[in-house]
Image (cartoon, rainbow, N blue to C red; front, top):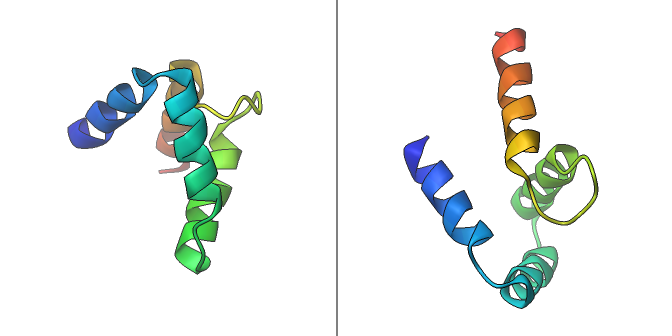
Length: 68
């Protein structure tokens, strides 16, 4: 999990244009794995901003804990 958080923080620190371009590139990925990942991202992105905020990640983590 620490690697995931580190990668998310690094992504969040990117410039807005770079995040936009990376998002566009991710949208162009093909295959069921990419579609599944994109679907999970959209599920977490509650405000449809195209980025995940810490509050959205915290909420998702709490939901996962409740399911266990």
